[in-house]
Length: 293
Ligand SMILES: [Zn+2]
Ligand SMILES: [Zn+2]
Image (tube, rainbow, N blue to C red; front, top):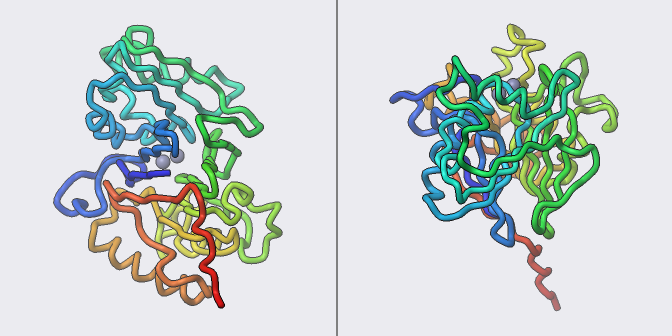
């Protein structure tokens, strides 16, 4: 699996000289599976650049939406492949008793917010509610589960060969709970992240900022780290940076994260902050153990 971060910001795009290193685009991750299948996780403003990188080749891709807050769908109307007849797009997202996924997305891609309507898109686009049981895309097994945020929100786990990617960008698992003591079965998102190869997780607030944002649907640093540690994630990327967090602030938050991670007994080098255009590769087959004599 190859993974590229096209947008690491939360809430609203925050471009400018003070966010140039970690990036200003909102949530979007490109995932290329071992057979070349292409997924996009969320369609924040970062998906615009992913679309430009795809060019005009005929493409079939799956877009997996965790939820429909604007910072996770606002790039859809600016995704160049959606304006090509040779593109086939399957959009997956959470079901809601309120309305079908297509109708909820059409509230954004319609007048007066958008010059185009969903039915006018030249591409072949379909909408599917994520099933409650695992399903397959190419060689990967996909699992979606509801997680603690505001409104119907999913986290995803993608298993391809021996590797797995867990993506929970908007998550407040410690709301009303002590994450350090709670039983595993009661922790939001736990089964998605258990022993995962790479966890991409909400890292919106510092511990000092969190008390003013309890119930907003995001994590304090200590809760992100406790979640990562308890689930046994091999490597964790903190993601969905607050729009107020400059590169210099995030450098400081990263140093705090590494220090607190070490205090939890976490492995060195296993925690980092996501930066736009960052790339990762997860092996499909785990390397066989080196023979010893
Ligand atoms: Zn968000
Ligand atoms: Zn959200």
